[in-house]
Length: 345
Image 1 (tube, rainbow, N blue to C red):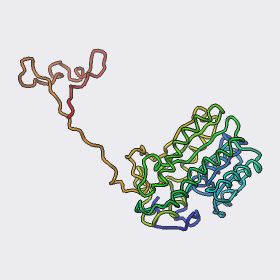
Image 2 (cartoon, rainbow, N blue to C red; image 1 turned 60 degrees about the horizontal axis):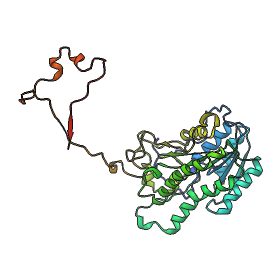
Image 3 (cartoon, rainbow, N blue to C red; image 1 turned 90 degrees about the vertical axis):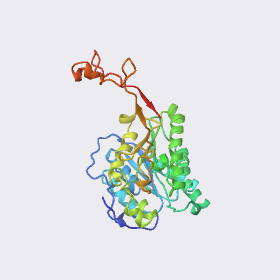
Image 4 (cartoon, helix red, strand yellow; image 1 turned 135 degrees about the horizontal axis):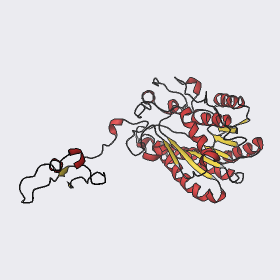
């Protein structure tokens, strides 16, 4: 996928993207892994949230979607869920506000009759070229949406979540290695990862599993709505696959972590879907230049060759005096012989 340069007004609209992302789970066949479960997906109107909500419905779950004000996207997602014969309720509002976090949980329980799957997925970001441009207002807004809402929604949901429930948080590669142009966003995603570890420990005695999916670059409305046109055009090209992920490619990870049948032994895990990178510097950030990735240092290694007993010049290779060269490489039991001594400087 090679997306052209483009921008949108935040929070973004799927229909205005070129190309539109694959986020409807077309062709995905459910197996009843989440039959009659009741899920709340924040940020479920588009992108990863839409793909997850539709995948949950295909697996047999009823789904509530909390979103800001992207009504067209939300209605389309609801239609996809209802086409699978499952219930869907839409709850609009700003999750940066504490009372809205409590409200979405109460509405979910009232409309669906309970709650046993929670996906904290909503997020915001704003690309900056200079750290001096990062204001306290933006910093607080990013934290209110990206991590405080996760805590507040989860806190409100705890009284409703029975044993066997699952909580899945959306992290990011930026929370694993940082991003100079998304400092506040990176900080919140790092917090999401640490919070996932801590909550998994705290809720394990109650039989509630807590995990996280931390993807690399993903093609969603958030990208053209928060980045400049040049960055959008090159978005994801530094990944090993040479492109960003599609939301449909990540949703099965959420299904896996939500299903008691598939992942009953998984809790406190951060599943990094980085397209071949390792999150520690070998994958350039979604907004960075791969040429800026630090290269591992090369150590000079001097091989010390075996010398004859009289201390003279090195003798011929050991295997040349042992007969068959292939046999000389291995010991009596067929195991490789130790390498010659090396000295590193």
